[in-house]
View 1 (tube, rainbow, N blue to C red):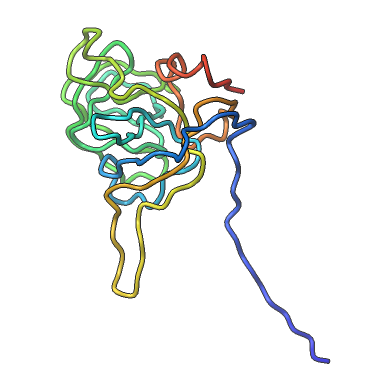
View 2 (view 1 turned 60 degrees about the vertical axis):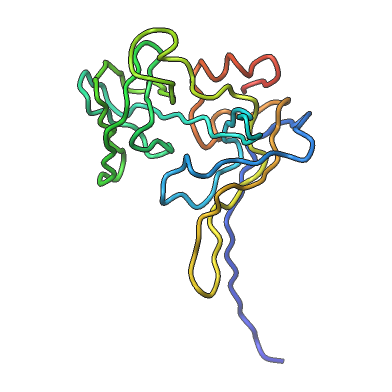
Amino acid sequence: MGLSISKNSETQYTDPFITALEDIPGGGTIHTGDLKAATEEIKAGAVVGGPDSDGIYRLCKSAEVYADSEAAAIQVLKAHEFKAGDFLSNGNNSSVINSITTTEDDYDTITVESGFTVLDGDYLYESTSEGTEADDVEQLYTPVGFLRDNVDVITYSTTGSSTLANVSGGIVIRGSVNESILPFVVPDVTKTALTARIYFD
């Protein structure tokens, strides 16, 4: 009998949920047009808000500041889904994103129209408009829960690949999560909307 050697590889999946006590029956439809062009999937534990008037859920975008800044160029860690045209806020100021530079290995540089002070480790989020008033710095989408599983947003075939306009996924609205392994940081404004139903460990 001959010796047969084989090798298999797989991607490890780390479940961010400690408990998932309640979800939206039938899941929800998530809009993919908010995502960066290079994004291939939305990871489990991403916060979603909505639904909008069409019944579509939207990603609640966030980012962690990489280095102190008082200028219009804000360095953030790579784990984010911001795009040019989004509004970026630290809770006190909000400004439109003019461009994003992704050439560095450790961080992206988000250039906003009107710079504001940020500190290393600050959490930023997507807001509604430019300015410093409460209506300006309000979170764009009201958080409702977390995506239950990884969801592919690009399909592949023999003729190439295409990005789906909308994808479906389970949404957990009551339970507990391991915050350290969520795919994106969770700013206080997001936690406030969820803590009645979600425990962050």
